[in-house]
Length: 93
View 1 (cartoon, rainbow, N blue to C red):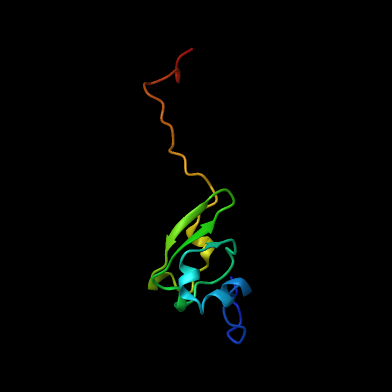
View 2: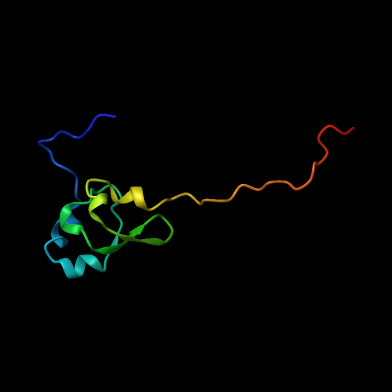
């Protein structure tokens, strides 16, 4: 997958760009922009990322810098696989 041009820089939504200077208001906010990149100014903050239904809490660490917010808030439900007990009717007529 082609990367974004270096001269453009990483995408950060204008709402987040304004809030990154005021660290206190950013750390207790809900983020709807899943496409925005995580910048180093957001490290050690705990934010809520909207996944389409409910906000998901995320603690931002140094390892997450450069990734997108949406990578850490899954939009799909994870269901355990159901295994059938016993042999069942396979092979019987």
